[in-house]
Length: 218
Image 1 (tube, one colour):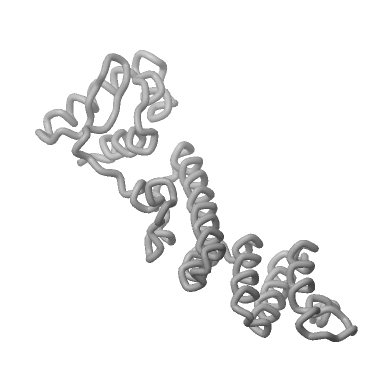
Image 2 (cartoon, rainbow, N blue to C red; image 1 turned 180 degrees about the vertical axis):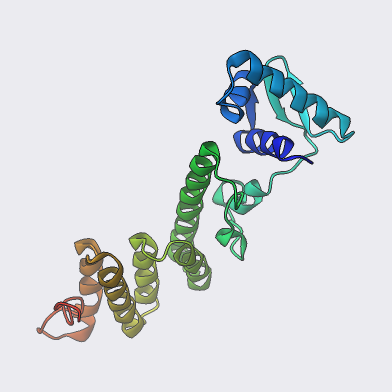
């Protein structure tokens, strides 16, 4: 299958459905309208000649044939009830493709994936399924190590399990990572979360666990 046909299928698959005008204008932006529509008609004709039902048309709308599945839907878990946790979360959408529409879609799906993992982890945490919550959080962390929200969830999981030493380690490891990579510190919200949980357990009146070691990193 040619790259043109691959781009056509990928665009419609990621959109669910699209008008001929949108497809032509997006895939052939350098062409004028009549030439872009002509190239689309040629691509549809070549796709039809493959003898495999991949796209169907309804007037001016293109959509995938009902027999075609999209692995992006599997990765996202059909809305996040039980997202795919192993491996899929780290795959990049259409690697090696650099069309503007691909870059935008790649970022959109990356953000959806991260939020899906975090929302699932939070539900598992609230349900007391710490192992499931931890697995989802680690997927999010592998995808975006500098993002605070999964680190904060990881901190909450450790605290919910009563693993205060791991909670303190999680905070300081993230603090050092942020300082090294961005020259900033975790948010006050994350510090307060740790302090509120660990200070009552320690029963001490000294510096808070989050403040210990907060001096300039060397």
